[in-house]
Length: 314
Image (cartoon, rainbow, N blue to C red):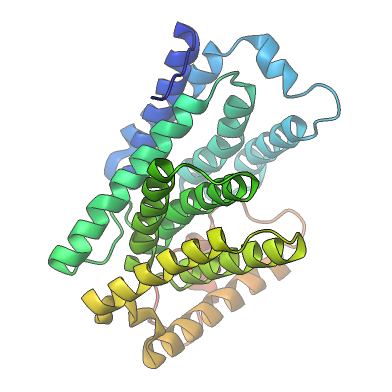
């Protein structure tokens, strides 16, 4: 049984951060449900306010540069929004979303006890993955919900899959885990991997493959047991084969030659436009998320294949 003895203040902070994450997952844009952005940001700021000042100060003490980096990022975002952005309407929501990243880091770094938050986040993302897997195998639906974009959803999933897999491998290399713990963990990683492949995200698939290669090189260089890696590799491969056999038109759609060529052409046009924007304002820039407002001025003649909402260079 997981025992997490924490104070009431720490419990409230963990729960506020979790609810902030949940509400952020279903924020779909200023024009759809802006109230959720305000709600999520408010919960995050309230959680930070509950953390004792001494704990927040500890992030800036000693030789730690991370706290100061977070402050510099926040300062840049404020400066960019107020003085550089050519379209504050375009920059508003994205500036807040980007600012939440260093704020989240500061809150987690200052928390004395964050195991409950980790359990809540992993459980929530795993539940998302489970629902996606059921919809994928049951209805042939490409995984993307509760987010709007499959690539963003794949990012959320592998940002959970990679740390969890790394933690498992480290523990397996130090001392083999008990069977009753090992099987559920490998099963959870397979559940997440299935959801990643069900998004049909090329970048997500490549990142999973690179992570596996990195762990293999680590095991080889430090002469660690290969068995845990082989089990993880087998689970990940099985997850991909399951997706491929259940809905090949979805799992392999991103690798279709025609679609791949179209994607390359679209991204080429977008990146060329972004480069031209950079050349016009190489130092100050034009502000955060102003690409959609400027893209019509740089769109190539005859290009109607993309709305130009963002650069797509993930």
